[in-house]
Image (cartoon, rainbow, N blue to C red; front, top):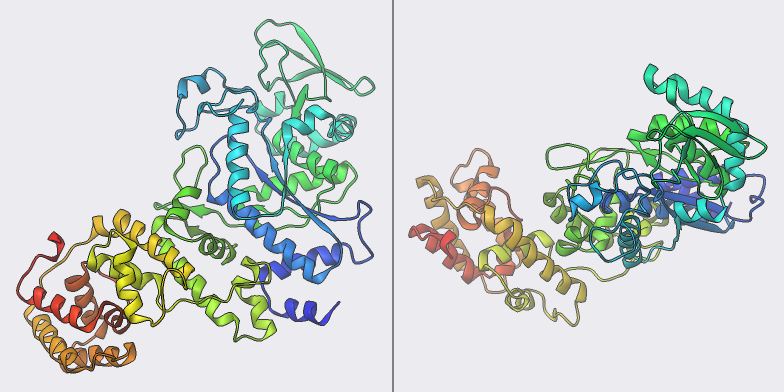
Length: 529
């Protein structure tokens, strides 16, 4: 192993810890297929959400980490379970009646309620691929329907039929009495209705490669091949069969699938192969702390995040603490944006071990950009709030005065942030702003702050301004200086939390801040601006 690889492993980055599993898996040499295969799965019964993206992003990070540790080539498959039957109609799609009429049919047979593709499955697959392409992921898309119908899975399906008894003996103990009595790993596609059936088998023929069931409506015995797309498999068996057919080496999964991973791992061993490496990540939660669901649409959509923040900030959110449950709601966006640029600013000054532990190394596949920012996203949001910004040019007027030489042309990343800040302010900050009048003690302190600010030179920096703000808080005997800063936020900005005041005042302007304080002291309604 190279010195760089040894340093990377010592960084304790979770991505390198995962990649080391694959190094150990092939310690005796590369696999016979000539590459290490990473896989991510997507269930297209609902629109793609950020949890879907997170799995691809994290897997890509492990893949890149592995490329530093090993010379074995890699591939990444984004697999869509689009042959699943539509069990229920998602809440967040149009033409609900159209979908209701096609329940239990494979997703690639159900008509597209949006009217843009041949099927609902194809529509959601396209949405997923468009997003992954937008992020520049290196992946190969694979459709369950195409794999089943093309015969790619035939050999593995015949193995499932051959090992039928051993496989159901893995599954049956996990089922209730009623389900156990009717369970079959094979789900025939009804030739008459096109629906994915969950019917008990009345016969199976290993030599012919067929299974027989009784049509639930006509009562007729129907025999279908298990190959060629005439049957699909129940979820846990399907997962194991796919691992076998594709020879998957690595796949992570959500914490809610721990039992499924265990069972599918047992089944793939029955089929004759080793289960893939991986780990179970925690789930994203919505604003109320509930699991995000594709069908309910209760999380942030892909489009939502990218309206208010950069793709890199989203990748950072996915990288951090994958085994910790995290809320995925709009209020996490500003922090994610600023943390990304904080990590980016530190990168150039770090030693190799620290760089391998820095999220930006993983976000940018080892080659993070060098552009930094003179101000934070949080301060931009507060500036947008104070000036009620509608156009980027308004904010740039303050920025160019604060940071010499800064312009949309020389700071394109900052220019993007300006646009994000304006959008986020109008949709989330402005509707919730609540100004209050200062107390007598706060009025006295604000008056003194205005006097001290007037005495400062025009070119006073943020640190000097911050010292004056602290001085006023101490002179007015605020028991907890946080109460002083909270008063500034609530009276001047209309919110309970805010930026480092020295930095904000330096950006907004000393004269402008004095004017703002004087308006508050005269009882002006800032919320009416």
